[in-house]
Image 1 (cartoon, rainbow, N blue to C red):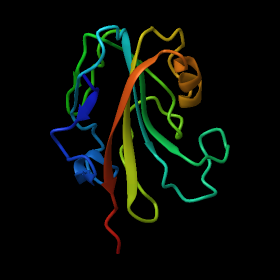
Image 2 (image 1 turned 180 degrees about the horizontal axis):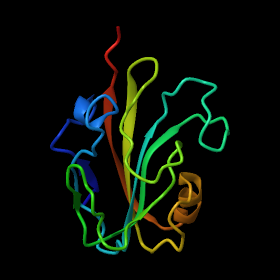
Image 3 (image 1 turned 30 degrees about the horizontal axis):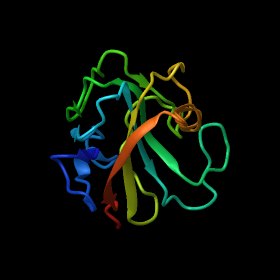
Image 4 (image 1 turned 180 degrees about the vertical axis):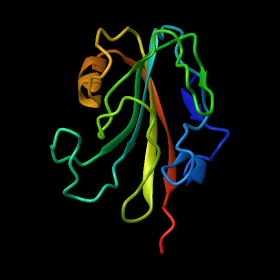
Length: 162
């Protein structure tokens, strides 16, 4: 089987509806996945935007090339979906720190043009011994050697312009 990530709210490579962005309700879309290896212990979900303009800084004042919008790790293997506007994360799930310093979903909010948003899902053979609030980079380092499968769902969004 191959790991597949979908959303009932938008198609792969399609437009993300405004309600899931900073121009709408800024709520998370529903996500569903299947086809993960039976050895899976946990999942990592990362939503990021590689299309940010140069010169953007994160909450620490560091120049970045990718903006992190949602970082979840240690999602139990028994979970295969997150509902729209998820408020109560599955037990054991931890949040990582976003580029804006928050630890919750922050929807697409491109400052300049249409951007692509990558929802990346990783099936891991282990639990990550990390504290909530770690960065995406720290999670990516901890995942090395533990990724059984991975997939992504890509959506696009452009803000209304005057």
